[in-house]
Amino acid sequence: MTDTVTDRFLRYVVIDTQSDPTSSTQPSTEKQKNLGRVLVEDLLAIGLADAHLDEHGYVYATIPSNVDKPVPVICFCSHMDTAPDFTGTNVKPQIVRNYNGGDIQLPGDPQQIIRVSDNPELGNQIGNDIITSDGTTLLGADDKAGLAEIVTAAQFLLDNPDIKHGTIKLLFTTDEEIGRGVDKVDLAKLGAAFAYTMDGETAGHVEDETFSADGVEISIQGVAIHPGFAKDKMENAIKIAGAIIDRLPKDTAPETTAGRDGFVHPTGVTGSMEKASLGFIIRDFNDEGLTTKEVVLEAIVKDVMAGYPGSTYTFKVKQQYRNMKTILDQHPEIVDYAMEAVRRAGMTPVRGSIRGGTDGSRLSFMGLPCANIFAGGHAFHSPLEWVSSQDMEKAVKTIVELSKIWAERA
Image (cartoon, rainbow, N blue to C red; front, side):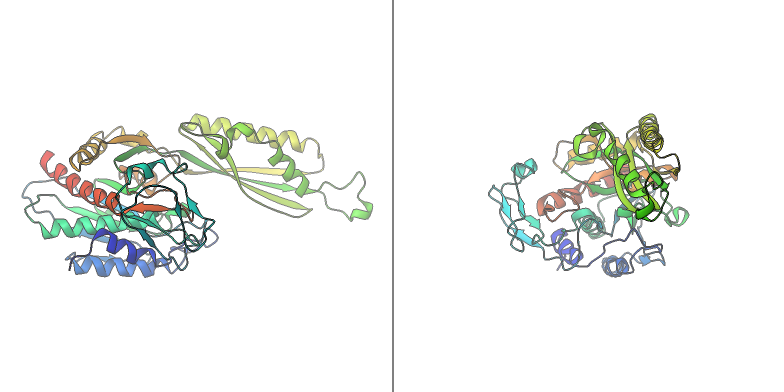
């Protein structure tokens, strides 16, 4: 019997694939390969003879062309890891069949409630089947929904050879959630001209824009001395770090910004009396906005440090990724065809931007222009994560229609 997209999704989410930002290996956790091996088995079983897992945990596969004309090679990509923000161990998926509206209380932790007020998209799900975790873990729809959709679409194309398409590459990555998703991707081996990540949220949405992103590391060297003899001598690095955090503008924090506003976000503080380190992520939709925020942040640091003449600091900016719109605007057909595919799959397409990044941000600047298509999940990185079976089925249809369009227009 053919697996449905929901069957596959339920099999994938119970495999723990959480990535680890403190690890220096690739993949950051060996357990991500457990899902990779399952995916390779599934792809081989549906007839993709070249499906394989490489040493970095990536899965590659090819759906061969069934037309006798040249068609640009496209790639569909999703990531296997789940976010370190909340546990992904021992996921127990729940299905609310024929959802009839209202809040959804999760059985594993009754205090966890998926509220309609926080998830207005639930209003469009009446009669659908909603999949959640039990409230004690995240679900993993980000991005195992995308994985299930791509494999299911691949099977549909192989089972229906009358549907004409060019060569299609499949790429499943590790460590996307910690910003290393495409560090070791072999683009020459992949051999695609254009790509799509299936990593978006609401059904019908196509995204051609991400944040641009930098990381900032601030190191503070204070003046340590025995507290009994510290008067007019000690400069406590912990207090200096606290003063910097306290001075951050309230209107450029993640919790006070939305839409096209960027933010400055402290992600970690470690320290002792002698030295302290602060980690920040800076986000904006353009490079000028990033620079402005970094200048403001360093001005705060300098101002605070002026009160501690015996202490020193370093301020290091590291580029993380850039807004993929710069690249995608040079290839408008990538998004145009995706919008048409959404239309043909029975939805009204919505073009938007992501307040975050995807593997596609990096891939676009590595030479593989890549837009993002909805996978259907909501409330990512939390125990309140959910997805509907019907929205995943719409994503499968979108992949199939998009594959047809590239062949038609070639």
